[in-house]
Length: 138
Length: 138
DNA sequence: GTGAATTTGGTACTTTAGTATGAACTGCAT
DNA sequence: ATGCAGTTCATACTAAAGTACCAAATTCAC
Image (cartoon, rainbow over all chains, first blue to last red; front, side, top):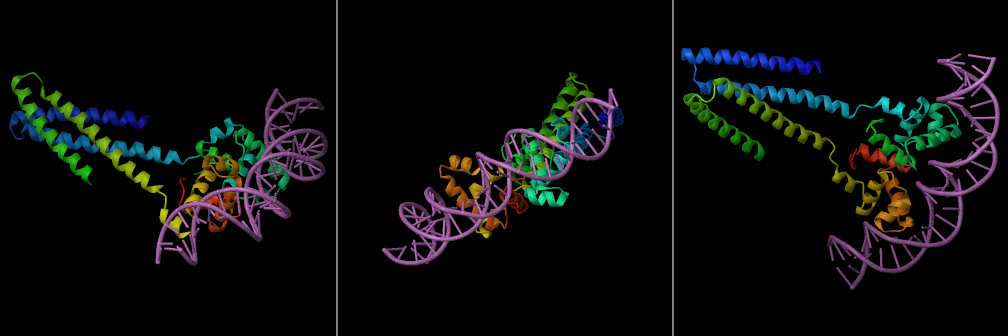
């Protein structure tokens, strides 16, 4: 937001400067009105490209950013989230239990809770929904 | 490439029109030079944003393009690939059978073949590998 | 048209996933 | 200290996934 205000302030200043320049140059006869318009056109075209690149970059990075707030909103705990990530990597309950140093029973409990919280019937559906909600990496 | 040529041609035409308009308006005194410059600035700013959005979109789609050659390389048939896509959407074997109008047995056969061809032990692992190989959408 | 690959589907079986329930332990806040 | 949320784990069960093997119809290239 701060950047946007700054950019538009700069644009207004640039316009004012151009007005003055155009008056001077027209009166002095050094430059034709075509030249002034061309410069303005090229300048603002470049500004348009630059600003759009800025904003689209922000969108680009935010696309694959995980939404930690949504995890809390869904009531998913730390441990449950860890299990979810391992599920998305294609691990079985037993393998998840081994990597997290807990029993398969514990993993099953976490998975069952996850399925309820993500409103999924299967772990594959949980993966799909978690990706849609941007709570795990695509 | 064709689009680029078209866009720039349109830009040149727009500039020429603006030159003529600015001459007319300046001579007739209807519009001040400030107005003309402002219009040009806004117009080319918008054009800059538009063109940049076009080009950046093209880059975005090319990133997550599926590799159909790799599907053939792995020996995955048309039907098997359809099943793979449905698996990644989180459907069960029964649900996949219903949507493809085949029995659950048939789906199981396809899944078993897919797991071998993708070197996966579970369908969740198959999803993960298929995404790494870029043969299904992320 | 002959053969190979694909698609289909069945039976029987093992394994994994998921549900339900209960219980114990921990950390943390009121 | 009491309570609550989270973590842990067990048992017993149902459901789904996956394997193995077989067999028939279809498609497609040669």
